[in-house]
Image (cartoon, rainbow, N blue to C red; front, top):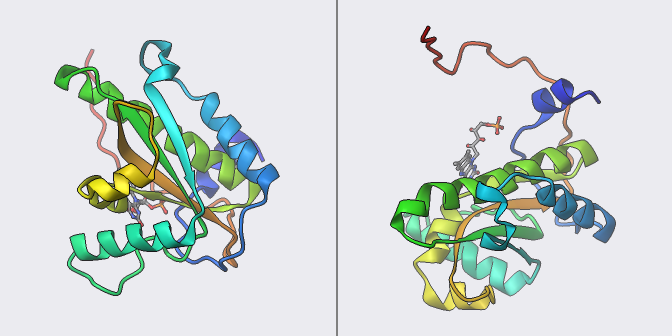
Length: 177
Ligand SMILES: Cc1cc2nc3c(=O)[nH]c(=O)nc-3n(C[C@H](O)[C@H](O)[C@H](O)COP(=O)(O)O)c2cc1C
């Protein structure tokens, strides 16, 4: 698959069989995160947490469902793995690069998952919800000073990826000069 076919194939998958991602696939997806750029190349300011603990995933999902005012919903879609990207915030002025670093890691992993045929979906809502629950943040076991920013669920799905038509003008562009 050439890179442009990969970009056109990537999409969010929101139905999972519950079957786990193989360790080989997971390691390739984590390796892809290591290829991502970070602000000033400070890789020590980002951290990934791979959560497969079903009880913790259920607690995060319940926190998100409550946060969204939709009790009983499944905002992690039954995926067996959630990778949370966390950043270290050296100060409010650095919040933009800190969030951006985490987002770029997640997007890079999503492209890797697409290339491998592993289902994935960006997860911000559940990470916002868990960030408001100190006991859930503690359960992530993050190194000192890291803040959860966003995540990616991973899992096997009966859905598959294929290049699709993408509207070419859906993002506004203006040219200066
Ligand atoms: C910043 C951001 C936050 C997102 N948060 C969620 C989320 O919490 N749950 C979810 O199911 N999808 C989430 N998404 C996925 C978007 O809904 C999805 O990427 C968008 O609708 C385009 O669809 P596609 O990714 O399938 O092309 C998020 C995407 C981004 C970039």
